[in-house]
Image 1 (cartoon, rainbow, N blue to C red):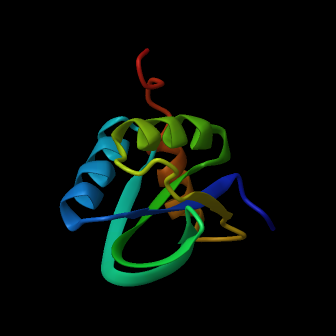
Image 2 (cartoon, rainbow, N blue to C red):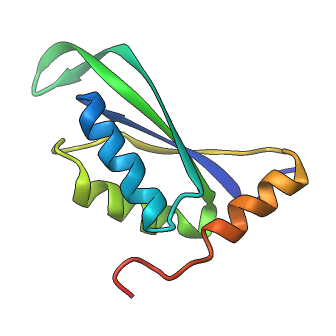
Length: 112
């Protein structure tokens, strides 16, 4: 059973930036909650060179309908030119937890 909920993955270059983004998305009610893990090591192509950097991974819970708003809030708060903002469907979960995500992200849209 696919739900209408997603977990959004975002990486940040520092713990301070990750904490700022996590707090911003939760306060804006575009995510019900966010967890930060790291440092992690990321290896990727950027401007024709392979990069290796320590980053922090932010995992955010929201609904599909709020993903666009969440992505806009992250873009505005993020220092990267092209930040990783990826939504992964939540296939199933505890009903009470999924209801909590829906309730906590039902607040006003950013800038409203």
